[in-house]
Image (cartoon, rainbow, N blue to C red; front, side):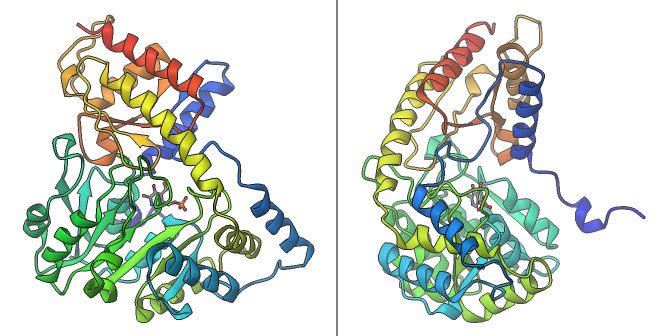
Length: 399
Ligand code: PLP
């Protein structure tokens, strides 16, 4: 017995690997600052936790409908109307065990061997692996710091072939925080108008985490002609600080939602009944805490971006949203550490940071665009200040 060919096409998640390494070092008593984890440091709001506890008290502890309870689907339908001006019926909604599971269901349910999926890089680590697991081929479009980490329409056009099944758009982005404006989405939409066989997977997981008055937009809203071939992926993990509850969802064409349910019926059956009750409360309750949390995130973003841009050799675009920054570190490549190691790659830079300065971040290579690295700033101002001064110190020692 050995692992399957499909399994051999994927890698363990590199971001989860950094989180495990930090926990291991902390257990050994090492003073390490972990900036690798992709989750808010805030707690799940009390009214959401209470809804989960109430669900247990009311014995909402049995199997549910495969792809979501009627209550949660109604709450998601109302969310799309309220936040995005989009109209969906409950049979256009799928609820899954986290957004990663939504992605998995959508791609595994639709990709045949040889199908291509256009993925702008840097990308969230799971996109290429899930595409490859499903038998498809990722086609990367490189969008660096010089273009604010956003794919240009002509790049999208050049990447599309007859074999293209999906293009993935993630805004605001993990790992860069870059957000597409409505006009930028319209320009991409004009390209997609010319390629009617291509479907769009809009990953809006960070929709609510935006700064400086940035107006979040999603492509099905600004290009209504693309509504029929767009699947929106969203979830409760990031905005509502519910990463452990595992609720993600999608909205799209009824046949696709049905196909995803078929796959889910033979894997997880349904998302956790208690988490679904909590998610219903999250989506229908008072949303004002989102703005308070964004104000805290924005302060941290400003602190981190300023300190990184003060670091010689780094260029850090200012992100529109999410809680990540992605400094380009071209200026430190080719330099040597005091220990005599020549830094040729961002992986080596990240190893130097961890070994000599006890700061854990994730190398750009994991996200498909180097040399760079990702910092998650979902941690306190004091910890961020300390981490950034350690980084500045590390860079100042390079020769
Ligand atoms: N999409 C993006 C861009 C993400 O960064 C993540 C999580 O890191 C997800 C989707 C999935 O989130 P989850 O599976 O925790 O709900």
